Length: 153
Image (cartoon, rainbow, N blue to C red; front, side, top):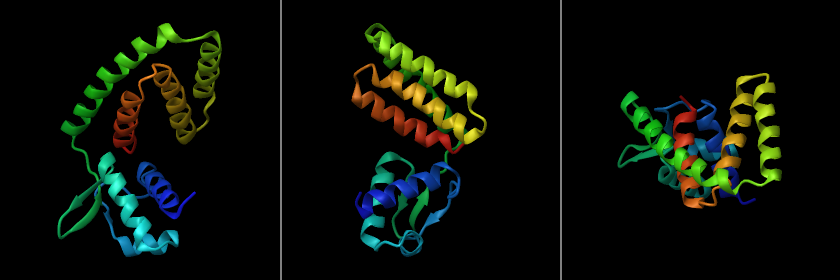
């Protein structure tokens, strides 16, 4: 794994877990020190997170963890409803017995989760296994971005 990939994963985790809450300014030098990398992988990670919508760049001010308003959240959930319905409708007819068995196992993990982090991760695995079965990688990629945008809330 490259320094940029490690930095991207660490920043994404810190944003989605709330360690870096919405509105937090992301200073490249501080992030580089925090993750023990140079500013180049930090800059690359911030650019990717900006393209995903988790981070916003304001010229002459810097990078900030994206803040979503209630209106933004309504839009995210409306888009999720449309795309998830489409993906599930495409996935269900294509499911094999092995897929169904895996989904049952993953649903069991959701029920058995003992804390919020475990529940969130198990729920995400269940849903994205189903979305992946639709065979529509662009839809799945957009759904990941929408889930990431709303997870911190």
